[in-house]
Image 1 (cartoon, rainbow, N blue to C red):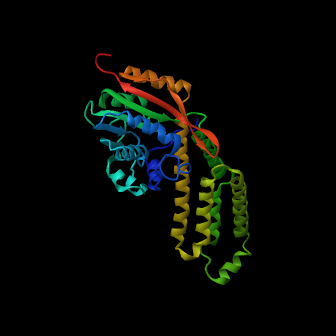
Image 2: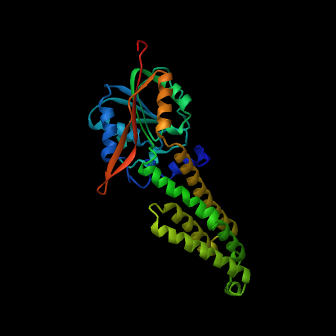
Image 3: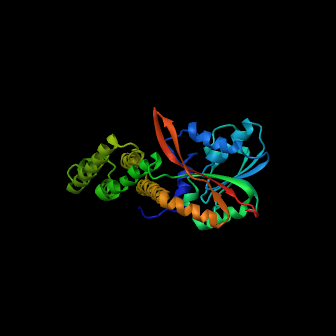
Length: 336
């Protein structure tokens, strides 16, 4: 299992890109198809005026689904979305403004310590949410803020889901970039050889500079190796992003001050490292059978009643792709 190197800062960067869901490439807008149906069936069972909290909401995908459902079906729901990270649903959402306005979002609010009163919510939701948190602390907090009889639904990472299989591939690209090819180090080495060459004469002398030519050859070899992997990768965006930063730093060096060029290269490295940290976090959050049993035991211990988990799949290009687990819960009353 990857080291859990990630923190909220790495998710800050992810959500700052304007993604609405945590599956950036799979859903161009909000969730659709079977995933949306699973959530709408949950919203349909809530009583009028129910107060709902979506934990680890990110840029609000599930909270906004709830708001859209409530508006479309003329249902009154009071909806909150919280996340440990700094989030910006206002920038990510491109739909009806009334849907966005129907949700109260709170960044820098962890699920382990929400700050809401006891027995405050009739419903709790989370997609790829609960499993990222400190489970004992979060479940105790949810039990505290859920009213007796309150309902909850969580979609969680399944070890064989398309999300996890894609993440494993992408995470493996970290070794290619930072160990096998050392792309950023080789780009920096070349830049140090050529950064101050501006005039035609200085540029011509680089062709006779053995150090510059060796650095160029090493970088070209690294880039060619990465480009070859991109051709067969299912999700090559991480690799393409890395090559893009290197290409812009080198090709645009004449239009920038040297410090700005090196800063651009450092920015690229930071973005890739943040993505790898986020992927490590994701892979550490996988819920296998043993972890599912642990979650259920912890739920029972704080007065929550879990239902047997089910698997969620959705149709994509003629295939049924496994998306994750669906786990429903309820808050037991004092009489149960």
